[in-house]
Every structure is written in C-alpha cells, then in structure tokens.
Image 1 (tube, helix red, strand yellow):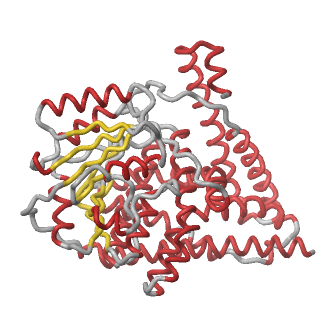
Image 2 (image 1 turned 90 degrees about the vertical axis):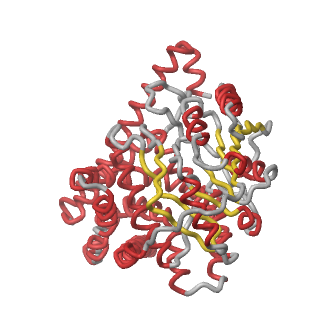
Length: 490
C-alpha cells in the first residue's frame, strides 16, 4: 500500500508539472497576442564599428564552402569587418575551408582560417579563442548550416549601436529545406513556434530569453562582463545568455531579419541534436536556477525563467506517466483520479504552432497538417531526452556531438555507430500498446493516450533500424563489409 501511494504521488507530480508547463506556454501565447504589433523598425545604421563574424566549424565538408561564401558576401565596409573560420576539423573540411578562405582573401576580404590544434571546450572554446585575437566591438556567430543574408550586419547592428544596454540581438531562423520530408516539415513547425511566438513574447515583455547559438550578434564587452564563453555545458549559448542577463544586460530580437538554416533530414541526426540540447539545457538549469531566484527580478520573470530552464524536464515526466499509467490502472487508482485538466491543457502547445504558421505563411492551413508528425516526434523523443536530462542533472559535461549537415546531398557523411536505441524504443512501444489494451477494458479514456505513445515509439524503432541499415550499406561501399562492421561496433 505504501508503494502504491508513492507511485500515485509520483503520477500526480508528473501531471501537475506538465500542467504548469502548459500554463507557461499559454502565458507566452497571451503575451505574444498582446505584444506582437509593438515591434517597430530600427533606424538605418549610420556608423560602422568593427565587427568579427565567427564561423565555428567541425567536420563540415558538405556545407563549409556555402557558409564561407555567404559570410564573404556580407554588405559591410571591408576595413571594418573580419571573418574568422574557427576550424577544429579532423577531416578534409580543413582543406576546403583553407582553399575558400584563400580565394576570398585574394579578393580583398579580411578572412582568417584559424586552427587551434585541439578541440578543447568544443564550440565555446573556439569562440573564446577567436575573441582573444580580435579588437572588434561586436561579434556575429553562425553555425555551419546557416546562410546569412547580405544585409544581416547592417540590420542587426543598428539595435546594438542605438541601445548600449543591449548585450545581444537575435535574428529569426528560417529554413533551407522545409519540405525535404515529414521530419523537416515537423521541425519547421517546432522552430517557427519558438521563434515567432515564444521569442517575440519574451523579448517584448521583458522576460529572460536566450541567444539561440547562431544567427545572433553580440556586444563583446557584454560577453566579457558575463564571464565569457564557458564550456561547462553543452548549450553554451543558453548559459551565456542567462549569465549576461543576470548581470543586468538586456536582449533584443529581430523577427524581421531571417537567417535560413538547414534542418536535420534524418531521425538519427535530429535525435542527437535534441539530446544535446536537452542535456545542455538541463546543465544550465542546474547551474543557474538558484542565481535566477537570488536576482532582483520580479516574481513573474523568475517564474517564466524557471519554466524556460525546466523545459526539458517534461520528458522524464512523460516517460514516468507512460510507465505508471498501466500499473495504476490495474490497481484501480486512476479510476478515482481526475486528470481532465491535463487533457484540456494539452491543446495549448498545438495552438502555439498554429499561430506561428498563420503569422508567417499564406498556406498555413496546409502546413499545419504536419502537426500529427510533431506530436509523434515529441512523444518518441521522450525516452532519449529523458536519458539526456538525467545526464544533465547528475552527469558530467559530456561530448559536443555535431549535427550532420549535407546541403541536400544524399551522401552518407558520418560513420554508423552501434546503438541500442531501437531496442529500447521497441520495448517502450510494446509496453505502451499493452497499456492501451489494459486501458480499453478498465479506463477507456486513457486508451488513445497510450495508443499515441505506442505509435510514436514504433515509428522511432522502425526508422532507427532503417537509417542504421542505410548507413551501414553506404559505409560498406567505402570500407567493405568487415571495415563497416568494425566502424559500426567501435
């Protein structure tokens, strides 16, 4: 009986946590609807301070040339601009980057191909090294999969030059390949929801927000004042953003400046990206939640910052509910527990995505047809992201695993690695389907909920097996069967 009571308490804690997260999302939606028309154009740039454009890269041979070409095409006085190709690569990316840098240097662009000799500190280490060898006042950061518009610096600098208390201004991410497959269509919805609704709501309401790691422009003195780039987490962008704001700096957002990027086109790449963000985001939660509450910010700002930093905690809550639902159904506990509020609040996140599509695209009604894919992906990611969250709470920093980019190429650019992900997902799929069967007979209202998880985990298991097989086949063409097996198992 004690164990059953404890499991019931855990279940209710999960329900309350997910409900609070949905309420925080609803607050952002309301703030967005109230403040979205307050955004005013910035005056044209009239002075041209020194700027460094930092391009941190690691084994990006498929996209590095495109990245450097876009940076070299920026419309800014050549004598006031430096481009740093911060290259930590261990493959032929280095030769491609060096050749591109030499080509643009010969054409009068101040571009530096910088090699550190190690990958210490990963992206944060590369950015910090670049700042140590520049006298620029401002630093723009772009990941390898981005293509910045020529007027990016002129548009973004106007905000920082005009308002000296702003540390960073973030642009909105666009998408280079939104219609590659259902996965990229789903990511378009997810990212648009964040950049249209969430970021506008936070920026225009004075809430704490974050630089998204790419497509932003920093005041270098603010970076130094906040303690510089730090490699203690896998999301150095979120970490520095909160440290700067805790020092009193403000952030700005330019939704009218769009920087398109390549979306991960495979489930494997997307899963790894999300796990890195979940682990890093939880690490920032661990380090900075107490400083947030010790700050002089208002209670409302602290509560919304807490919801922001805790966003990945929803994944362990989801997994706990999946595991506990059949147990508490069989013991007839859930028959006496009302969770109707959670069902109603579950409608809030889809509303956020619908609003973002309606704000951006004339064909938004067609685009929101990808919402079921987004729902399945969110549920399917919960197992892997739960492991990442636990690692973030109780483990070390971990390794920064890059998200592969292909620039539309079908080539296999990463060696496959043996993983038991599909076995875990198969097990969770079987468990969820069994739980659905239990619910059908004892608590039919929960049957659709468990069926969705069964579908989500089944899809993840099947796609994981398929992508691993395709990766092995592509690798075997280059390395042979024995060589590919060795690479698979190492």
